[in-house]
Figure 1 (cartoon, rainbow, N blue to C red):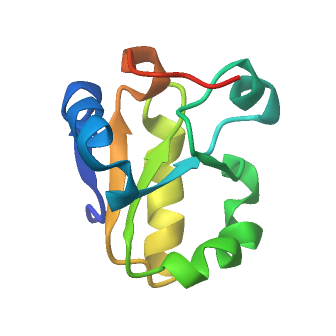
Figure 2: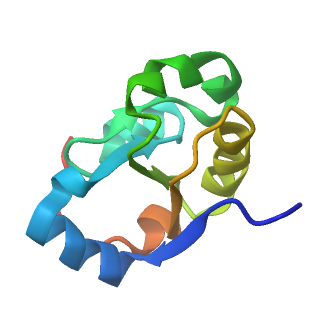
Length: 107
């Protein structure tokens, strides 16, 4: 599988988030239960197993930087491939996922 995304560490993204969070569209692909336990403020919730059907919710942001988030960084990689197949060019993966995130969390 060719690489269609760029890994971003939690530390690097935390700095970018503090400076200008509007530079990224945040998409949390975890389950609803995981999302409700705590997510990065402003993250849109589209569960991993629904991405193939719900990607159209992001079409108006297709040219923007999209950061995909899951618990550990694995489901978000698969979601990145799904979005790449649909023509999304600027995809980023939160490396290590929420397990590595120590920034603000919203419940």
